[in-house]
Length: 568
Image (cartoon, helix red, strand yellow):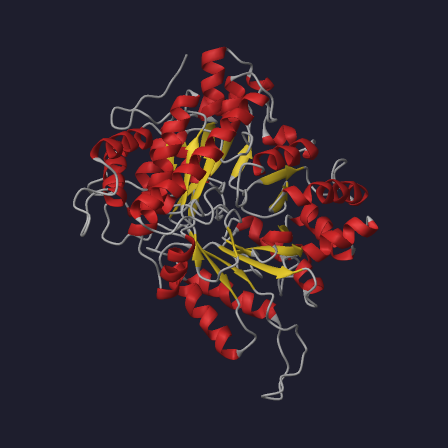
């Protein structure tokens, strides 16, 4: 058995995990993971003006710090980054709405987005209220440009705002399925159809070499909002409609737009954060993220205790976090939204010999997660005499904190047993390391598993029904949404081509009422993919070495500098 051990940070399973911590989160007073855990808990839950004894007792704070130190609960990346710093911008993302179709609102939306981005938080915006392009403007005699140019403006603000000189902006834009500009919105990110003047290349070709090369909405994830009216029309006709079918074809070929489902009592919750897991109907709402690591939690009793303290931690965060402008404080006080999520689910399954599905035992664990967070979220707020949370659970993608914990990210299956990953840029060159997935390696070492038999996201790319069903079953226990991207084979391949679109659309419409959002990623759809699968043998031979890319390229997952994107 070969296991990585660090004297400074003994809980990390790999040198890669420790390296991510050193690059992104370690700073004066938080040089080790244990120091950061202690400092963060004291910042969020400890003594402060007007609360000399702390929001949590000394014993609770000590146990909570231990659970963070042992990687059983990981607060979102913004919490980790701001631990011990004077400013406390703990929110990973902010949810905005275009409020009215006026020039004043256009200008105000830019101001709000920039204020949020300057904290290091991502921004998600629903632009549906803006009138379609080409409509006459009575007051000025002009012609409306439509919402897409405003999305481009916000995208370019995001390009220029790099928090702390290192964190790339994360943006999300959505539009109602009935909006007249939907046909243009659907294909707006078809970079493979946009030529680069003076060359024979398209934008997609160029971005394969340098992902920093500007392209339409290249910093923005886009989705289409589907309402109760869409769902009822489908139920009556068994026809999802031209927009939905076009959306499916675009998604399975290019990866975007994604799908935002908002039915019945959730009709107005069209606002999403940059990664899509937090839902709201209120402009200027915010994220408040942390994740339980099922891969490290050993028993149901321990899950109960960790969930109690994690829920209390996030409630405390609603009292201690700084926010970018006054309206966000008002909405937070009204909603007190929590986003307690999950990670390490695939590791949990592999440890117990399950394949990637939700067995009865996992349902039992999920009921504890759901029930305890509901009970404690309300009871602890009552004890503090503050408003109760309108929602308690949301599953973030947990990319970077998943690396720290050395486990499978979010609800995702392990991407690949072994891969090489771009992870930092120096002198205009990306560097990469070979990585063996920590959760897979743990199981290979402890249970003598064959690396070739460990099921991965790439293996499951040919079984999208099982992937969707897994997300649907987890969603039952989550009162907001789940950020999960289903890997698909490359567009044009045997399992993903024009002839498979209708079957995929039929599967997705079947599950739509039980989902809040949905995204896919066909292999090779966007340039700058940071992960490249390799054989277990090749990765093992090159562990610990740092390689320089032969070409300049940008990591699409924005693992640059301090803190990831949206809970990662």
